[in-house]
Image (cartoon, rainbow, N blue to C red; front, side):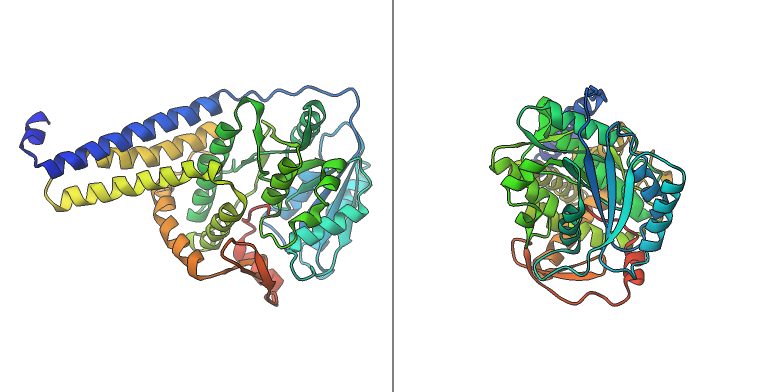
Length: 422
């Protein structure tokens, strides 16, 4: 190796050095995230009294595993009074009969907790369908605390009690939320990419940024609980009118008026199943839009740096090989390999399933797709989300809403219910 490098040109040595620096950075950052994840303690401190809580679950379409998701959402494990409101846009929604069947079975079995189905109607201009469902759900809610949960989640019996315990025990807390975990084995390429995006990119970074206080200036709100006074002080959920990303924005407003957003340790499971690479692309687009609109640069700069490291390593490897500096390509290629392996490892450390060998290419493709999505978002200022098309401005906020695609069942089937909570 030394002889090869001594004979290499200054250009080759530069490429080798770049690869060495990228490798060192990736190794250090991976170790930092891995240490954070390995230090997690899923501890709970029960309350003497659990306040009543209303859980509003906006629903549009029939998600993958919808019946199992709805059933799990009613089996809360919450020691206090709890009511669950499934809120739909329309009585014709294909998910509504599923929810009604689950609610009827819950009542017939005499299980704890109340549940009912509510039809909200189409959202007014400037409101996303989900935000409108949250608004209507709040009008029906009777609990002392208000929670909002996504329809594609499958919560365990630990997560809602943990959210309330943390909210009530943390001085100054206005909201709590649960980090997402995709724990099922990937069946297709989109499943693999979605799991890595959640389990290896977003959630470990959120845990590291939150630190020991578990506080963040925003909410990743697939399941979030608010004190009513915190919602009152920000003007209610209507404060997010005009925003594509309601949860992150509401969390931002909660922090701005002086409350804390606290992330619990207990993860919230999201059900997946058979999403293809093609079906993943619009999901990736929305997530990058969400990040642009809802996440502060103090959080996202690490992701930009990781993405930059990937492309520096990739370009350096290709240039070294094409120019004949084969020894110089060793370190950039090593860093490129380490980037993918580190994502696979973080996915496992966080609690995700082992990646099938046939899908082991996923971490490298996840980064490779990012510039394509960024360019598309730059020129295409709209997103198709659960059968509705939202026009966006340069800041990824709502401009106006076009008519939804007429075939809701078709739209939701194509999306396979892989969406962000916003």
